[in-house]
Image 1 (cartoon, helix red, strand yellow):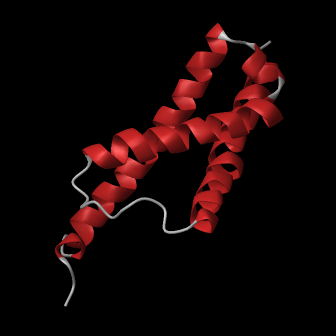
Image 2 (cartoon, rainbow, N blue to C red):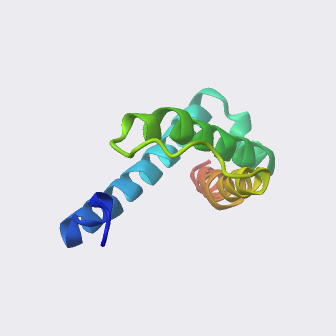
Amino acid sequence: MPSRLHQGGWATALLGLCLHFLIAFGAAATFCFASLILPGLLRRPMLWGPAFGIAVYLFMDFAVIPLSMLPPSGHWSSAAVFADEILIHMSGIGLPIAWFASRSAMKIM
């Protein structure tokens, strides 16, 4: 029997997909806005991208998820899960955002 969380159907799945991309767009916009104030972010994307990924993870884990309607599930099941989540946010979120922002800025300048 599916839990209450899995009974939303396609409408809920579509809402989740849209919110996912809204959050990703917000993260990218935040980095781009911050780079206007701190242009050094664009000069060293391999350093600041992963750092930004950690910041995104912390914001999601300690602000967004607690404010959602998800039931509390306890924090990280193991150190390996925590390390995996941090590495994913560093390499899969922060680094691409910083890299693309720095390349876009180079074309503008």
